[in-house]
Image (cartoon, rainbow, N blue to C red; front, side, top):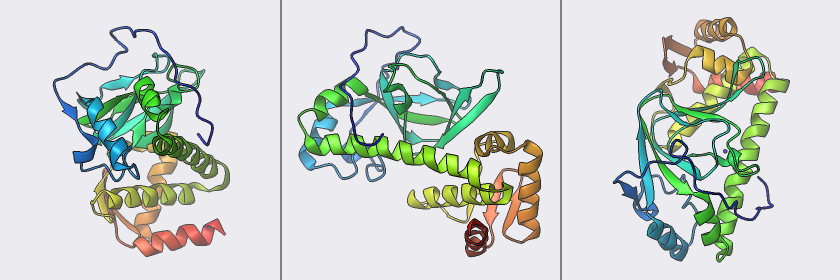
Length: 258
C-alpha cells in the first residue's frame, strides 16, 4: 500500500533470534491461496508463480496484541497478511504513537525496511492473525531473472507510495467529517474486495487508533461518529458499524471535497 527504481537486494547478516520470523511447520503455496488476486501473485505469469511456490513461504500465527516487528528491527521479510488485521505505527519523539496504517488480508507489510535495512515502523496484530513471511533477499534474487516479477515488486512499492500520499491528503486538506467518511469508505471498499459486506462490519481498531491515523482527537472521532448517526448515514454500536446510506456517505465526501 516505491515507484520505479528497485534497489539491489539488501544483503543482510543473520538476524538475532528475536528478529527472525519463526519457522513454523506450516508453509503456503501462492498458486493455491484464496488471496492470490489481492496479494503478491496478482498478475504474475504462471512460470513465476511456480517459482514462488517452490520457495514455500513460512506461515506465522499471532494472537491479538502480539508484535510482528518493531521499529529498529533488522529487515529480513516482507509479510503478506493471510487473515486478521494489523496496525502499523511510528514512535514520535515525545513517546506518543502515530498510527500509519491498517492492514488486512491480501495486503503486504514491512516494505518500510527496504531503504535502510531496518524497519522504520512497528506492526501489531489487532486480532488473531496469520501472515506469510517472504524473505526479501530471496524475492529479489528471484526477480532478477524475471521482468514480470520485477514489475510486480515495483507495483507493490508504488502502491505503498500511493497509500502514503492518500494519508497526507487526508491530514492536509480535509475536515473531521471528510476524514472519517474517507476512512470508512476506504474500509468498506477493501472489505468488499475480499468478499465481505460493504455495508456492515466490525472495527478492529479503537477510536483512539482511528484518531491517531486521521490526525484527530479521540473526542472529535466520537463526535463525528455521532454526527453521522444523526444524519442517518451510519448506525454505530460500539465498534460495530452499519452504513445505512452508502451513496449518501459518498456524496457527503464528494460535495465537501469540492
